[in-house]
Length: 92
Image 1: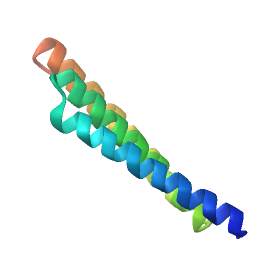
Image 2: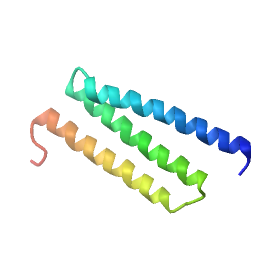
Image 3: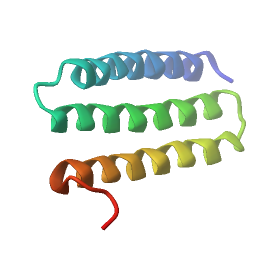
Image 4: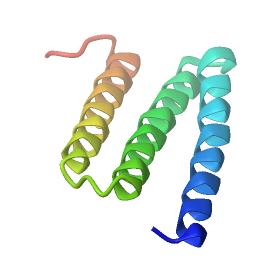
């Protein structure tokens, strides 16, 4: 791997770390429950992106399935939470 690509990967991971802190801040001190759900959704998306970048760094394509699962579980969790906040029940 070239030095340029290694530097870009570390810069990307640092930016994702800052984004994760911003999402954590929104999830912890969000004024409403909807803001907290958006913060958790954002953190799951950034977590999936971190897994993708790390898999590129270590040339491990098997971990892309893990990133897909993190994104899928994040989507399902946020959808269930949004439905609960909207209607008060998940299963009708």
